[in-house]
Length: 445
Image 1: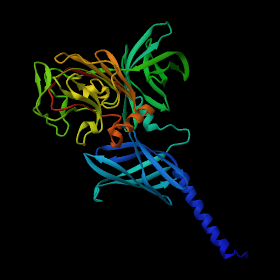
Image 2: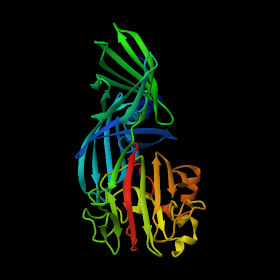
Image 3: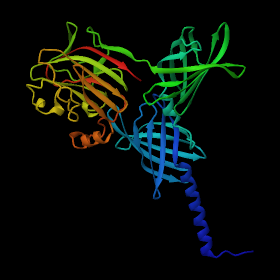
Image 4: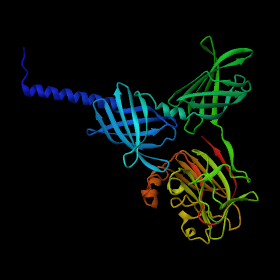
């Protein structure tokens, strides 16, 4: 029998322990598709863990909103991982504590929502699968295709066939239908791989049912480009070009009769200061800010406004509930009498500006008592402000220019300012009389 020296035996134990820790860390590092059970239903997200200098950090990206949250105090003990996330729910600051067990390429565990005093307010289970090295973040990519699209197929004779197709994400899967010359046809399968989508369906062609496939890739401008294929006996019988663009629908937010599409910011009831007078939305007196009941992510908002003499107001977007005011989370299109209000002396706070950050060029509003037309276009991180038919602001959230301007402004310490990808539209109570009409929104989601 070979005797191992005591010091060497201790070293072997340390090496074994170190190998176990490294193995567990290697297993954790990477991205995970995670589903958490919540009282409101399943919540999908992508977790990403990284390791540096013996420390582990991580973050989560919401599959619904695209918002990113950083992990705190990531700890790995054998096959157990734990960390915390600071969140806010219904205006209450909470800490989400995660505890999970690793097993090969999967994990299972639970979450607990604690208030600042450590009281457990809610809990639930979670499960996840590790993303393979070449696999795209499936949760996020599927959301890129959900919605309605206008499509055009080029036929063999050179004619074009136009159709509407719709994709809906339910329980992590995409389903949908095509609505064209032959009526509505449900897809038999929808598959997504990165920026490529493949959907199949059966259609009657010249009196015979044929299997069709459409394969397309998402382009940088948000459109789809690819080809249609008729399958016969498992082989391609015919093919042609196919393309699609997102269907943009216009929603009337204010019809000149009611405020059914709005609610108060701090309470559901709308304050008495907001009234409909002769087809016009008028604010005068007090009543608090109002917001749309629905949230919007990518949109084109159009409206007309008329400010009172010396008046100040604003329209904010991608606003979240739960703060003292909408401007804590949303950015503002400034409504102002440039001539009589002090903010008019500073271009970054004048009418049409992205308030306190981007000036509206040389464009100025019409005189008090006249109607101005405005438009806000928000698409991803890019946003435009228009005033009386002229684009006056062109900004990009998160760009070097944006970050520089925010860092030099009062918003520098506002943690939630302009961080939401989706939110409500808010019309401000700034104590001055202001009127609005023809408020419409085109959703580009």
